[in-house]
Amino acid sequence: MNRRDVIPRARAEEDVNDALDFYLAKAGEKVAVGFIDALERAYRLIGERPDAGATRYAHELGLPGLRSWPLRGYPYVVFYAPREDHVDVWRVLYASSDLPAWMAGDDV
Image (cartoon, rainbow, N blue to C red; front, side):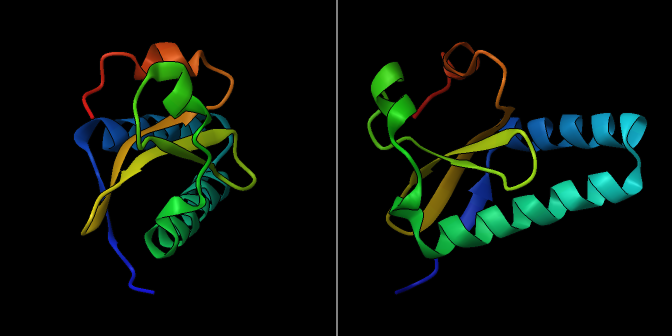
């Protein structure tokens, strides 16, 4: 099994920065670092097993190939699409938000 590079889009990086700002302001550095650790574990897993994520939102949004993976210990979901040579991370969103609305309009 070949590991694929995980490449976050600009929107995904903005999502991560927003989450970090929130955790730093509301919960402190330890929680923010834990969030990054959970994100890195998720990226490593989807890079090794890109087909592991759920396809639920692919069907809801009509976006074939879209997958999602929850962050362990944090209420965030990584949305990504496996590609031949990499994993394309679209968004990293708060799980309790209206996820289909947040994803609408994003290009595959």
